[in-house]
Amino acid sequence: QVQLVESGGGLVQPGGSLRLSCVLSGVTLDLYAIGWFRQAPGKEREGVSCISASDTTPSYTDSVKGRFTISRDNAKNTVYLQMNSLKPEDTAVYYCATDLGRYCPRLHEYVYWGQGTQVTVSS
Image (cartoon, rainbow, N blue to C red; front, side, top):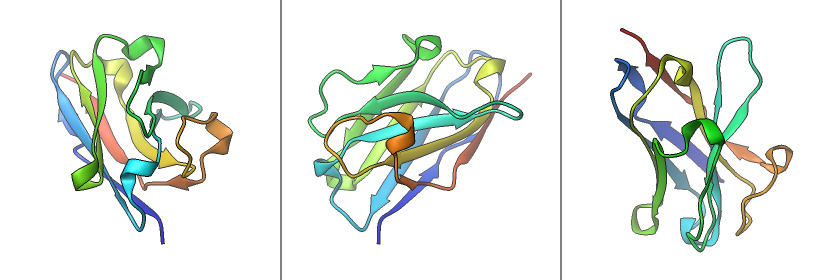
């Protein structure tokens, strides 16, 4: 059974950093692309970043470019999202997801989702 579990969220001041983790179980991570998403209260879920199975050219939404970095450790079956220079507008529940494909799919094609981890950026 495929499961994704996020962790690492919390409360941080503006300008601070957090590193989110997404642990994949039930399958071997090195075969699959993983995406990170977020959803703020009253807003639609948006894609934040995605990394393909081959780990080439990760994608980022414009609002996080230069601040967030996605990476993967296949030995640990874990994908990370390093978030630096956090802003209040980054406050949201963050999710990781996969469609068990090698390349990053479109939002509606993701099949397996984690339960999410809350990130709150506030002074």
